[in-house]
Image 1 (tube, rainbow, N blue to C red):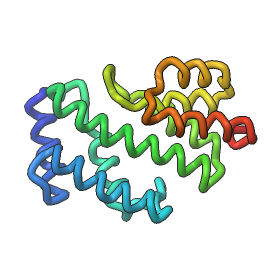
Image 2: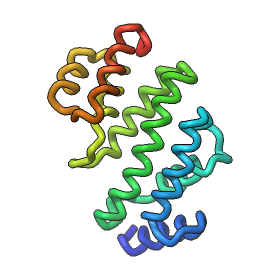
Image 3: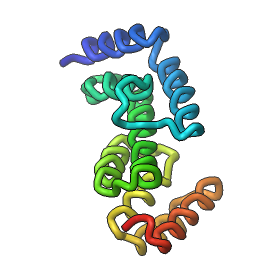
Length: 162
């Protein structure tokens, strides 16, 4: 598919959700996501949830055929969905096998320069790579995310990831 076709498909997705563009869709998704996370209502299997519908529609796009700005905006939405699906599988559903799958997919949406450093830590811990997770935390995680990364390392030590 051409870039023009994918941009048209992206615009159709935005129109479907009543927003003007991918940036408004990103904001709409973030509002739904944060409300669900706060209320423990994020459920990856519930197709009635707006954030799941947005994820499904965006996942059907050919990202390589989108301009860089739009591609990164779509990747951010998809990364966030898979990142939160990972955490729900770890702490609410206790389904570590599915968490590994979601985490791997979340990693695939992190583009070069993306500010998130927690998803790699989650994936390392889910795969038993504690030394790599410690090193990543020490070398790559900034002061803002470091307390959470250290919390994840402590959770690993308590057996949460196995």
